Amino acid sequence: MGEISFSNHISNKKSAINSKAKLAGVAKHNLRKYHSQDYSRGNIALLYGTTNLMQDVKNVYRKEFDAALHEYNAKQTRPERRIGDYFEHVSETEQDMAVEVIIQCGDKKFWEQNSGDKIFMKQLYKQLLLKLQEYLPDFKIANAVVHFDEASPHMHVVGVPVGRGG
Image 1: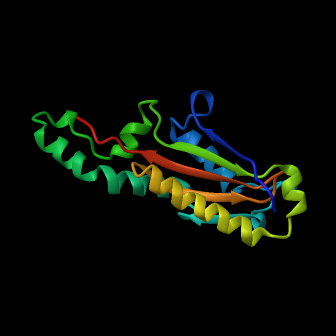
Image 2 (image 1 turned 90 degrees about the vertical axis):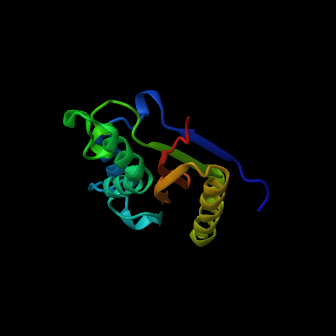
Image 3 (image 1 turned 120 degrees about the horizontal axis):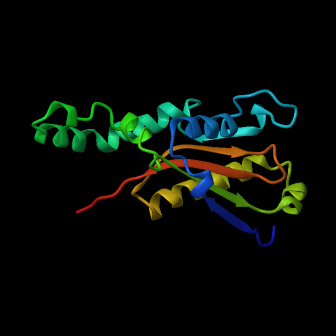
């Protein structure tokens, strides 16, 4: 097959996911939650998570932050300082609440030459997803989808960076 080109994009600035509305927009695009002649749900492959991206991100928040949230709330002497749901709390602060990484393998020409081999490309993206998890263990993946219905295949990965700070 020869050499395959790669490109990556990480959401930030205007494309940052800093509200539930932006997360819903990402879900609409990534999971094809709209009707268009240009796109087909049959040409996407869900590699990780579910068809409910919002819930997938909420699940990451609960798994990763519930213990720390419980500890934080236990230290609060004033009830108004307690946080009921950390996902909801972050979604109201205009902070980045999730990050999207887009990974593209191969260019349009490569894809035209290999358009019949979606199984290979899906396996390639699964391997890249595993490597992403291995190299960035504190980037907790909520959802990953491969798009085969655009000029060249690419994977949208939505996750939550988790700091281990102090």
